[in-house]
Length: 267
Image (cartoon, rainbow, N blue to C red; front, side):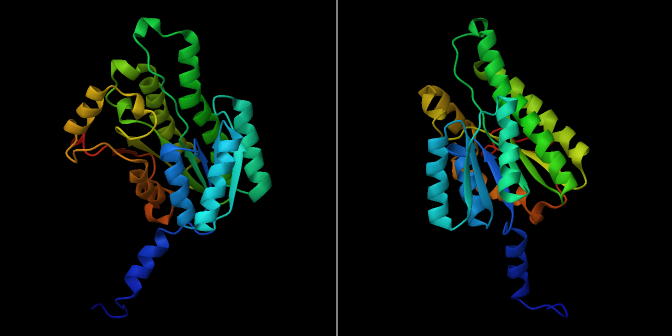
């Protein structure tokens, strides 16, 4: 044993660096799927959590559930992230309610299926791009600027593994998320050293979006992964909690694959 240490000190220190006690976290798309799981995990780690999504009633129900199961302070805010005015309302409401924000998770996303690339309308393209990139840009800029001027923080963008290996079946989504990857790297420079900005890149995940996949696409995702399954929303709690807090204090500008090893590579 090293001089001056005790066996009990190491577990305590490890628990402390993963604690989010006293932090204020905002999760867009926080009423379901990956966002809902991350919000629950943050609350369990001690953070106050703001649930933001388009439908206020759903946000309020989830906020109540998280508050009842964890004891954490919660707030529900209706926000369509594709509209900059809504993004500004979210920012202003959080600051008015809590005085600051320490963690922002840009999780809201959408990717309706289409039959062919030539049938994609301009309206579809604009809607998917707005939710997956334009909104995170506005929120990242506003929250990042505030964090940088008020003690720092962490921004976590939820991208997709498809941004690195785009396919024809979700190309607009992949293009927008590739932009989100670029935004992640750019914001890390813009607001460092006080603010850390990272992205997690999910592979296939068992959410309501995956329910619409053809069976053969689901099986393909399972067969291609060394872990031989697709993800669940709960699989992202650990990585998000790590990135949000002191445990990842030297991590910024990173794109972290969480896909069961499907797109494993050495560089």
